[in-house]
Length: 206
Image (tube, rainbow, N blue to C red; front, top):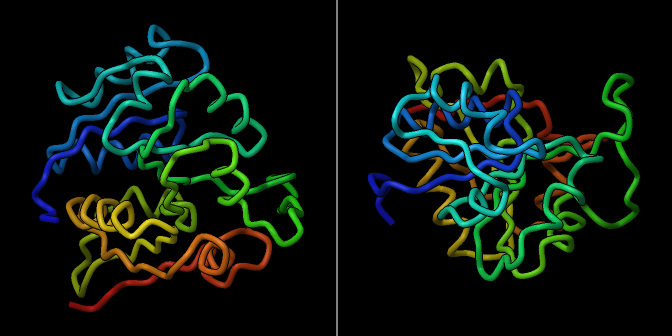
């Protein structure tokens, strides 16, 4: 898939991370639809700051985009996704982190299950790709194209085609996508609470 392809990108959640990714996406020519739990009216001032390629919509409208970015707090995930009537084959970037207590740095204990596996179970039929959760917002907000290379965006997922699409999306924004493997094993590498790639910022030399 060519990285020059333009996607529609829906965000579920409109906080710092969603806005950072949206900024890169709009700059790369993609169209962004913001959504949150409070409704489109609450997001219109935000969307207007991103120009003509950004708009505010309902969660259901955002979830109809080519790529859906799940970017809400861990406790908010079940409520945020429950009203989407059909996830049939949709690509969802899970950018969440399983914080039980963010302020104290305590991760939720899910046993052998990874955070993205838990979220995928809440979105039956979705093709979930874990990405953009491992980077700090202030780093992600910077230009991913550095003087010596590009900032790496790690990703994990069980659907090869979905990962190829997310890779093309990340590449179009200037990131260097690195596919780590499946949600269970690779997802564990990226999650808070011991994942060695969580908070690790790597530049791929070019």
